[in-house]
Amino acid sequence: MKRRGMTALGAVVLAASVALTAPAAASAADGQHGGPVVVTTEGPVRGSTTGATVTFRGLRYAAPPVGELRWRAPAPADRRKGGVLDASTSGPACPQNGSPFGQASSTEDCLFLDVHAPTGAKRPAGLPVMVYFHPGGLLTGRGNALDPAPLVRNGVLVVTVNYRLGALGFLAHPGLSAEADGSSGNFGLMDQQAALRWVQRNIRGFGGDPANVTIFGESAGGQSVIYQMVSPAAAGLFSRAIAQSGADIDVQHQVSQLTANAAGTAFAEAAGCPNQSAACLRALPVAALLAKQRTDFYNPNLDGRVLPQSVSSALTSGEVHRVPFINGSNADEFRLFIGLIELAGYPITDDAYEAGIQAVLSVDGATAAYLAGVYPLSEHGSASEAVAAIGTDAVFSCSTRQITELASRWMPTYAYEFADRTAPPFLPPLSFPQGAYHGSENPYLFAVPGMPDLLNAAQQGLATTMQRYWTSFATTAVPEGRGDVPSWPRYDEAELLQRLALPAPTTTSDFADAHHCDLWTPAS
Image (cartoon, rainbow, N blue to C red; front, side, top):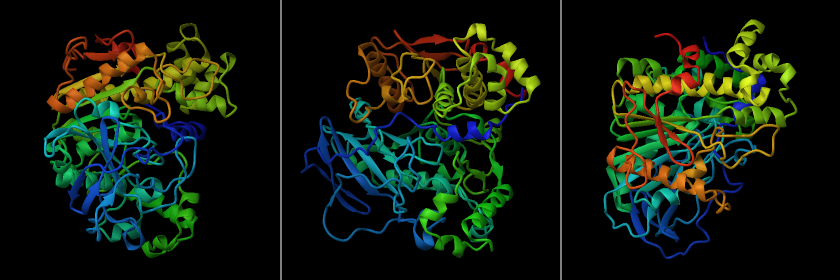
């Protein structure tokens, strides 16, 4: 069956594709000062030590994208004048409207990253490096929302990155294209590449190995990982990749530069620049841009520079960076979005099950009736859970499987499904269990600031196993099973998948059947 787009209501809630985050930005200001000093290409910086982690925050990896640099490829940052930078405070988030999933920001000078290293790391020590791209629909979020200390304790460095978002990060427009050989858009992806180049230049001074860099991220961050895997401009910048819930429908259908330019023209006219003038756009205040940008999510376009072809095309042809790859999704991804719909005052009742399918998946009545037969209410606790199961399969699970299938032809590939249905809930109480919803795996990999006891003992055991998987993969290119950690085999022809659930992970091969992927995966 062809996947359908979601209705306006469904599209709005997709903007919530973001991890469980703390309400305020993380900071090392409470840690011990007088930490180690590292010399970077922009000048010396002093870190702060908290527990077993020394963190260097607010490190500029590119010039401020303001004035004439707005909507241009990131430029190198100037070397600072003066002494040692006190790197105890993270840089501001990139411009975004306030929401339950991201604090409002209007600061364009936002291209900063944080480096987290073990306190005992010798410099240089050549430790594995993990670079994290945050979630948020390419519309919201920030790099420092979660604390990577649990990963760092396993002997890796973690770099978290801010990148341009929304219209400021992904606007394509004829006036901007005219400045760059016909190419515009994808500025946020270029920022991520600039951060990776900064890592190549500087990470050895922090104890990391520039030849062993793993990129990873969840939701829009996972999508970003996949985009970088097919971007020729990212060649040589990383050697492993982990995509968490990133292979959804939107990663496979990028629009052309011409289509993106047309959408950008409409945006510019609404913002007050009807003459296709890049200068007019650059003169607009940030508030005017945020007021007129889309409120659902942003997608990269096929600009011929960062993305010459679509993800599915590149993976099919093998024109991809052939690095070891972990790809996965969660068992109940779409329950987060159905929960947001319910909290907005639109609960899906059992007697309106088919109408709920129509509204959320934007399908006609006949298709909704057919899907109601494939996903009968009798097999689900409620209509909300049934519609969520359809959304999970259609948008996330089977797209993830398709990306995994294609990738496994060219590179060592490992697949997972996070399936702890007792995961700590993100939303207020609903009429149905939240289960293993979109983003629910993140507290098992990161610490959530201000919530030290978020996981119970059993969940903490699963978290420890997952942290070992992620960091062993970053170290050896294999998510190793050691001691009480079960082995994780390659995906390969048997479609083996590691199910991350209580009481312990298990290996399964029935993912496609469980998620009706014969229905949702287009015939090749």
